[in-house]
Image 1 (cartoon, rainbow, N blue to C red):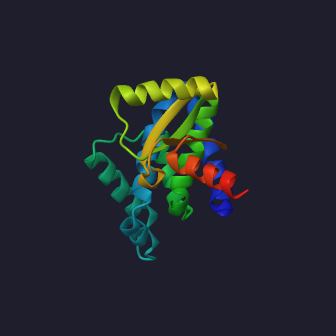
Image 2 (cartoon, one colour; image 1 turned 135 degrees about the vertical axis):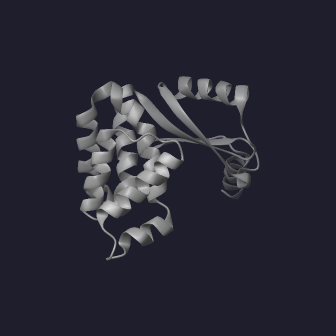
Image 3 (cartoon, helix red, strand yellow; image 1 turned 90 degrees about the vertical axis):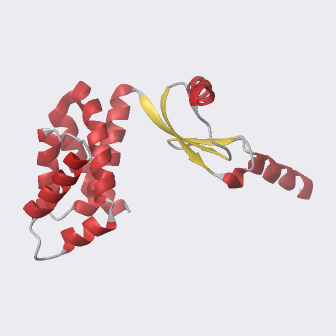
Length: 180
């Protein structure tokens, strides 16, 4: 995994430097969409075929993106072409992740993964995010993931910080206290 990160870093930094601060936020969604496309196993098999050129892979990805209603910015298209020319399609999801990290750093926003035993939506999610932003002291870009094994409560991961208020974690704490 470290190798992909090493490969992806120069691409992500080059795109970030080329678009500047305010435009980077707009391209973040495009990079995420392209990363999801690049993660598709059938597309990767097609791209790995030695008889297929980088231009054919680019045309296919661009066609799928346009079919899904995604406009590809010229700078993102240039990045995609460079990635394909160098045979680095497998690194595109990591490039998108590193690009998002650069955008988040510049805007003061952090990604938060909220794991919950039950679905959290609407006003409940907004209230939880507001509380978490106060707790972590920064703006959060929250993503909710269902994790029934938590039994109840939430587990929040922001960068390398973890806030675990789940029933499962509390039961583990009680088990440790009783066996000590």
